[in-house]
Length: 336
Ligand SMILES: Cc1cc2nc3c(=O)[nH]c(=O)nc-3n(C[C@H](O)[C@H](O)[C@H](O)COP(=O)(O)OP(=O)(O)OC[C@H]3O[C@@H](n4cnc5c(N)ncnc54)[C@H](O)[C@@H]3O)c2cc1C
Image 1 (spheres, rainbow, N blue to C red):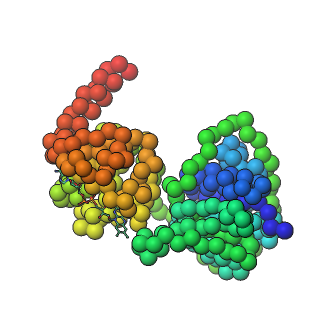
Image 2: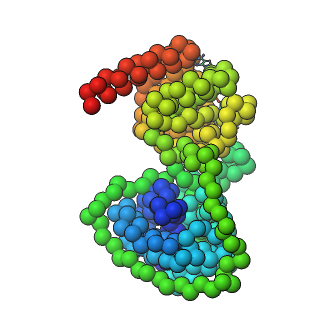
Image 3: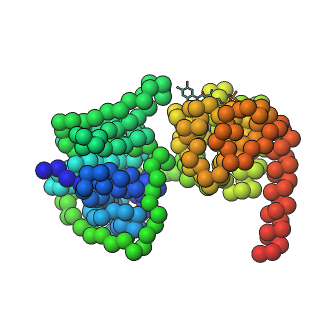
């Protein structure tokens, strides 16, 4: 009988990706509702060392598959290995991050196993009556939230949007079992040859990883408004992000868009500069630890979620913020 909630962890260059610990956190809720366990699966060349981190974040068991062929992500050997694991362990649920890797891998497996898959989920719950997984995702460009159930096939599979689920605190007293699975690969498992992996500067920037986000809205008045935001972001070692209005206007690239049809972020500090706070924007940032809003309209809905609000023209407020922050930084450096 199908059992346990599996998370297919993601590593890049041997580093565990944030979405994997987020998924382990969510898998804990689901496993609790089912009275089952959380099993993380990690694939790569030398990745056994990642097992401990996953256990400290709530995995009861970690299955490790190591092979030089798994060093870089390639669809075929990864799909083969995960397929073998699923066949052997018969999980109830399998979760993948909705990253470029997860979104490539999961449909391969769904087709091979003949089961259902929901892409880019933002909500996962167990139906208290049927114990089925309810997978919720925005559809039709975010105009509709669809809750999808896979009643008759197992495992129930979902890719989950990075940044939406909350990881558990790192708890070094947690213990778990590490199982090493030996899967044999042959040259035939690899029709693709990786010649080179090159990282573009743009790819390295990921607003979901930033601890400080300085976000601009239409109130910036034009693309040049982002230069000032960049200055504040640089001072605070953060990144610049945006509302959709500015992306649609071509002022900034799409991968910096926060919101329902952009990215979900949860930084330590989120500056909302000239952003009205439309529901579709709030959906992507309201879980931020500290929200600071600057808006000239005191009834802008952004103030409903802001921890700190400044009513004023950002052309005046922003230079002052930069100036003050420079002063504080200089003082701090003097003390250090
Ligand atoms: C299906 C769907 C999906 C969507 N997805 C997203 C999404 O992912 N992300 C997203 O952001 N939006 C999304 N939207 C769009 C969303 O509804 C809003 O239109 C958008 O968020 C508005 O962006 P804004 O706040 O920058 O602009 P506006 O709503 O125009 O707000 C500009 C704000 O700036 C203030 N302002 C103007 N000048 C100044 C100044 N000098 N100083 C201080 N404040 C000033 C104004 O008072 C105003 O509050 C979506 C919409 C739909 C229908």
